[in-house]
Amino acid sequence: MFRTNTCGELRLADAGKTVTLSGWVQRVRKMGGMTFVDLRDRYGITQLVFNDEVNAELCAQANKLGREDVIQIVGRVNERESKNKHLDTGDIEIIVDVLNVLNTSLTPPFTIEDNSDGGDDLRMKYRYLDLRRNCVRKNMELRHQMTMEVRRYLDSKGFLEIETPMLIGSTPEGARDFVVPSRMNPGQFYALPQSPQTLKQLLMVAGMDRYFQIVKCFRDEDLRADRQPEFTQIDCEMSFVEQEDVISLFEGMAKHLFKTIRGVELTEDFPRMPWSEAMRLYGSDKPDTRFGMEFVELMDVLKGTGEFGVFNDATYIGGICAEGCASYTRKQLDQLTDFVKRSQIGAKGLVYARVQDDGTVKSSVDKFYTQDVLQNLKSAMNAKEGDLILIMSGDDTMRTRKQLCELRLEMGNQLGLRDKNKFSLLWIVDFPMFEWSEEEGRLMAMHHPFTHPKDEDIPLLDTNPAAVRADAYDMVCNGVEVGGGSIRIHDPELQDKMFRILGFTHEKAQEQFGFLMNAFKYGAPPHGGLAYGLDRWVSLFAGLDSIRDCIAFPKNNSGRDVMLDAPSNIDQKQLDELNLVINIKE
Image (cartoon, rainbow, N blue to C red; front, side):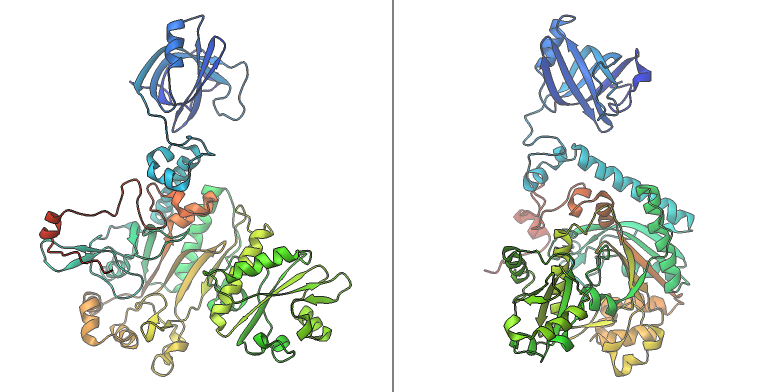
């Protein structure tokens, strides 16, 4: 037996017991004739004591230990004289009688501490060492707890956990697929699933009624803090349901997770906001509602009421009011202007107006507007003395709103309004069914081609499809989309019409989705579902800025696994077996 107890288990009540512990050396401290070793495992840290006067040979052996050596000790639990209130085991120590070195370690490339001296790339290269850090290990434990609670909750609601295949056919909509060549079918490819969407719909046709799966999904898209090329969904589908049924059940699951994992009791229903309202007030379909600073449209106030050509030529002018920020210096305002001009935001500039202590308004465009106009601006923004008004404009309403959204979030950060221990949840509903793609020159499904339109909007499919709203819904928490879903089309004729609007020929629709359309001919029930992003939920609960630290072995921002050095080249023999020729374009 390598251990009788873990390094986080022993307490003062165990004093006098002889125990065997195993783990990693966290640190070694030499104080006179005494040597203290902190021994660490997944469960905690226990202090070991070696006394040169009692056993000089054993103490000399302890003095040779290095960080991350793997050791086993046998010793007696003793009450500590100087207790450590920061450790669960801080009331005791182990007086060591036997020391066995099970394995030695090279000097780690970074310190295995919560506040490590290793940068992201170094930590990802040695991720197996990074996972030893207490803060990262806790993320893995939190992830485990959440998946267990999800399973308990859904099992209690009659769901079956059913696995679906990883090798499927490629789908034309959505993000790019990761594809896998088939050796047994030369020239043909599998795709890794972006989600099990069609498969879970087939499970509903199969009569499974309530399905879920905690499943890996794959999308070949640009990465960011809340996006990885492979991610995990809590994927769910239900038969004989309407939108209200799905929202109610999965709002219940979110409340269950908050109560069991965070100890937070959420008793009120989550607010629901139409997509159009979210875009009007926040410029985002995933608004952070922990703070206000909603948009105010200023076209009536500023367009044509002065000689500022930028506003007079704009198709959208919007502003936000930052309370108490009139004290911002010119340097701070220039930094905000630089922020909105950055390439990822791409705005041309920023206009500001300070409300002075005497109620007058001092603006960066003073020479173009009278004080009367600026007072109208103050009233429209509901601004008071000491407030700062920030204004953006453009010739594309949607793009300008998104730019203003980024500015709003930046101000929220600067003013400390985005507290990670505060949670604000809501549902975004009534999404547009379609969005126009300039690249494709056609309407595209905003969610996917199987989303059911609002019943009252179905007649518009023939006359004005761009105005059709979808039976779709997203759950948003603190500005992060944590889940989304829809009621699905179960009528083959309506599904066929949807494909036609999306530009599919009958032959192309059959080629891509014939298996689903054929299944619907055998009695498909009304059905709908939702997929939660497990990685995003865990990162929110853990207070992380990125989902990477709640994934055991993540990719970097270039989609590379620097630990495994993947993706990598494969040898010519493998290429020949797969009938592949590499031809990289310059």
